Length: 241
Image (cartoon, rainbow, N blue to C red):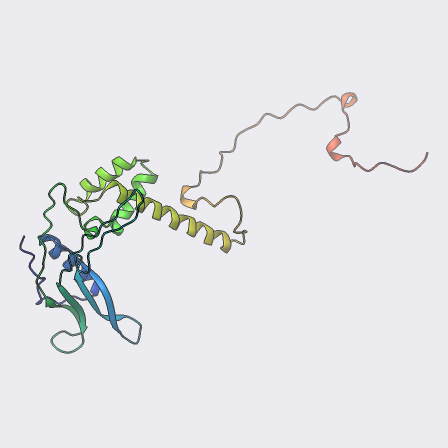
């Protein structure tokens, strides 16, 4: 790993395609890039430029909190930065490209050795991982440990650095999203929002009970029949005989 800057000779149809390719390349070089700002909106409100820098850019700090968890920054003030721009003129034809503004780093590359801090970008669970977690957690009822091991194995090297805390946080986010959707569904159906329950999604509701033949009680003989109290009025008759 040589911390090489990303290539500048590639054109991408969308920023998402550029970002995915950039993640793959920078990961192979032992670093990650993050978006720091966005500029130049078009008439539709879409950005045409994003400024990015190395994830270790910025000032380092040490928390002086007296709590149990002591936070410490791993930033080194790395100067590496680049921009992703959408160019209209030839030969770009409204496509996206990378422009490296500073390709130098002031830190060693991440090699994945035990005991080293894993960049947060290498632990991020994306949409494909979220879908996998939802299925395995809800349908297969896997434990947190099983989910962590499973997502590492199922996606090759993509999620090899994901920790149990990352999986736990993602499951909590999924639950919050589900609760918010259930509340919106209740509002759409005209139900009060302060009810002590939420609605189960239609896909997870149990099927209706199967109709069964029930043997009816036989009728009593005419002389033994008594009035049905459910058919009687509770009002007393005030008329005198």
